[in-house]
Structure formats: C-alpha cells, structure tokens
Image (cartoon, rainbow, N blue to C red; front, side, top):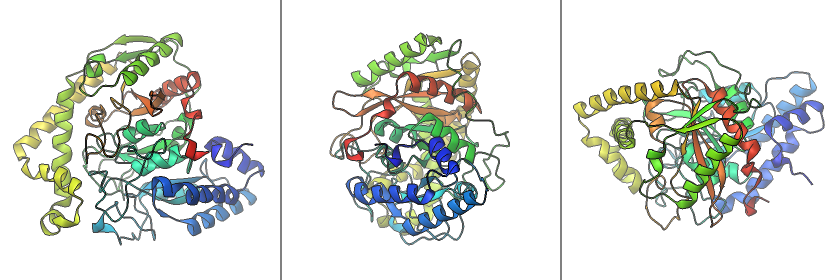
Length: 464
C-alpha cells in the first residue's frame, strides 16, 4: 500500500486538485510520522502541528472554492531554523536566540505562505549555521537517518535528516560553504544551491553576506525544481538579490543529456586527502552513465582547489565574526565551543587579507565561468567520504572532507545527487555544477541521471 509520505509534490498536487486527497490528511500523516520518527533523529527543533493543520484546512477550502495558488498549495514543508517565521520560535539552534519569536516571515516563508503551503515546523541546524555538531546547546544535534551514530552533515542538518527520513518531501536549507549539498550528500537526498542572488535571503539569519545562498533539499529533482519555482525572484529587501528573470525550472527535466558536454575536474578529488574508494568509484560510474546517455564527458582543469578553499573560508570567517562581534565580546560563554572556536578565526583577519580574498574571488569566478562557456555542467564530488560517526574524526566541525566551497566562492548553481551506497550502507553522492542562472539545464542533467539510477527510491529502515 502506498504511503502518503511517498507521494511526490507533483503527484500530491494532482490528487489534491482532483479531490481524492485532502491537505488535512496529508498533513496529519506527516505530523504522525514526525511524532513517531523524529525522537530518533532530532530533525525538528519546533514542530507546529496546530499551525500546520490550520494551513491545511485553509488550503482545502481554497481548493473547494476553485482557487489554485500554486504547486505547493496544501503541501507540507519545513524550514531550517534560521528562517524567520512570524509567531514561531526561530532559534538558530543557539542559546543566544532560544526565546526569539519573530514578528515577520522571511521572504521564503512568505512566498510559500502565499502559495498555501503547510509549515510543519523548524529544523535543527548547526549553531548559527557555523559550529557543530554540538552537544553543549539547548537542543540536541540532528542524526543521520541511515545510521543515527553518524552525522547528517551541516549546517542544514535537520533539513537533510527530515527529508531522508520521509518526514517531509522538501525542506529549506542554507549554503555558505556547502551547508545544503553536504547534508544532502550524507543523507542521500537532492540538495540544490542555486545561483547566488536567485533566492532572497531577507529574514534569514546571516553567516556571510557574500557567500550565503538559500535553497531546497528534496526527495527528487522534480520536487527541488518545484520548490525553486515557488521561491525564486528579485527581492529589494535583500541587497544581494539578483534582478534576473525567473525561468521554468521544470522545462528540461525530461530533456536528457544527449549532446551535452560535462567536464570532470578529477584533479580536485583523485588524490585528495580523506578520499574514499567508494566515493571515487561512484563518481566514475556516474561519468559512465552520462556517457551512455549520450553526453560528451571529458576531463577539465579548474584553478587550484586550495585557492577556492582559502578564499572562501577567509571571507566566511571574517564576515561571521562581524555578524556576531557584539555577542562574541559580551556573551562568549553562551556560544557552543565549536562555534566559538571557528568564529574566533575571523577576529584575526585584517582588512588587507579580506580585500585580497575578494580580489581572488573575482579572479576565480572569471576563470571558472570562462571554462563553463565550453561545458553544460561539471561533475565532481560533494563529500570525499560517507558520513563520519559523531565520535569519529574530525570532531566538532560541520562535516568530514568536502569539496563544496568552490561554488559558493563563484556563485554558480550546484547540487548534490545520490550515486548509491557505501559498503556500510551509507549514502554516496556526486556534485553537479551549472552555469550562472542556468538552473534548468543543471536540473535536467540531474534528472537524467536520477531516471537512470533512481537511488532516492531507497529509504532508511526507520522511515518505513
């Protein structure tokens, strides 16, 4: 028997519009799963059952009255707990904001609300999207649904765990150095970091104004595309918002990859420290799948990986310290130790350092996008190994070895797509990178692979 949580957003929408399913039934099913499964993985900081059912009832009334507000009408979703939600606790997973209840919705929450979406609640993160996983905070860290002894990645940890466990089809995350794509990779979901400026960050607590991106984690490429359709567009309330036309994000989902050119920067990962044979094998197999589907797959050389990492980290840590400087000086003991240690690095960045990093960022972006003129997408790793254990190495950092920061530096759209499982049964993933503001092509490439290798059809045993 098909379970309601297995419905795609598109299929749920069709049934809601046909009157064979109600949003109240869909929402109650999700709330029941949260109550049963979430105590094992701590994906939610705040569940909002009363609001969710009220949202669902309003969506059902709108359907009955013949009003169609969009693809997310009546569909449950959840938000990383750095997105402001009017009247709902928004903590940033921190003692410093444990009682914070915003008066206004973030731009993303408002856009979902305008479509009649159903908010299930707010999801665990690493503190202020920076330090973690940590056990010295008011809320426990999220755990990986495939094995709760392993981390789900960060900082959108609750988003990755909730989607993988089938608590919600789509959850919003944020990505400053990989915080959407990392949890997606470790939890076996789709995770899309769109082009910088594509989605408004207004009402989302900042980590780094220069590098922050908002985007979805979802069960399928189509679900991620539908989320992008709901939340994209210029917003004057976000100084970094891009005045770019909103495309049809679903336009190329069935187009395939025949004749497309895909570059593989093997020099990034082939000899990288911490690489796993399982991950490398899965990347090579993915390249073969694309070649069999008709794409031209060839090696490509990008600027040195360490340049991207040094540039991105220097900007991120300096801006994070600036955001939190007052609390850092007056309430240092209220931060988790892991957050404090990482943020402290930013206190030692000079103006000269930061200007040089921003100059380098421009050079790296130009170099990458000159190369992207010849390719429709790049194929590389998301994480170099499966999710590490909580008690393993490295301790108190956002994840194990990843290769995600380069595309925060350049702002290109990038996404994690599942590629199988390790010998221990943990998810593996690849990273696909697209041209600036060309998410439809990137999503089309990901969808072609998903059809050929539907790894997201497999779910953790606790989600059954």
